Image (cartoon, rainbow, N blue to C red; front, side, top):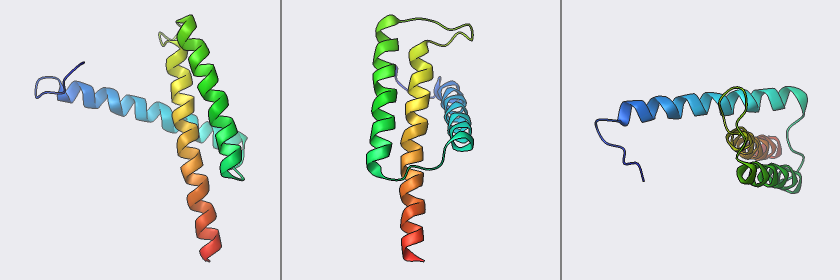
Length: 98
């Protein structure tokens, strides 16, 4: 396990910010192509599909030309879909209260 200490905290924070940018980019791209989820059930189906792709890519351990493992890219997609689920529920709850 890698400990976050004063020595490496800045480097780890930079990596976290880089990952967060990738997740946000993926979320924005998905939102341009597809509407928000209509239900938690739909969100579950999409996230389950991303999870299965992540597991398959994890087992294959392939590296893409961008240097990322295929599994990393699938994890980014899964994270983006988890945020999209939360976003969809937040928007839906605001529509109900208005």
